Image (cartoon, rainbow, N blue to C red; front, side, top):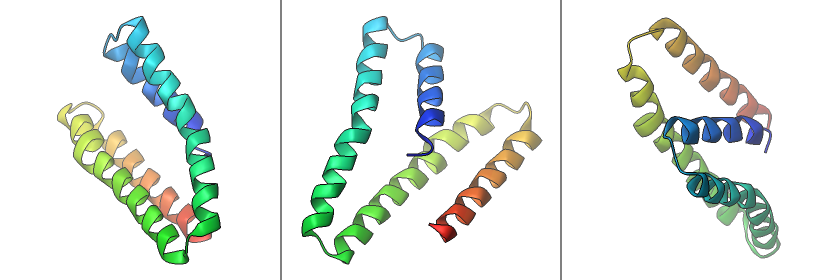
Length: 106
């Protein structure tokens, strides 16, 4: 949940860049806003009735989804534009490194 603000900024930037209609922006932002509380409630309900294997499976699904989107959508799109390549690659490595450190402590 610590990254929600950054994700909201990225989503808003993408919506503005895509020139989405106002109604489309509102519908996407409302869905995004409700995703966290729905996820929290779902997680609480599942934690009451599930085993460690179910929790591990959910974590694996979330991690795999994140990696898929990053590796198949975001990174190729960013690397198509050849400007600031050193900065893009450096910040990508830094981001993955920081997330690895956080995962070790969490």
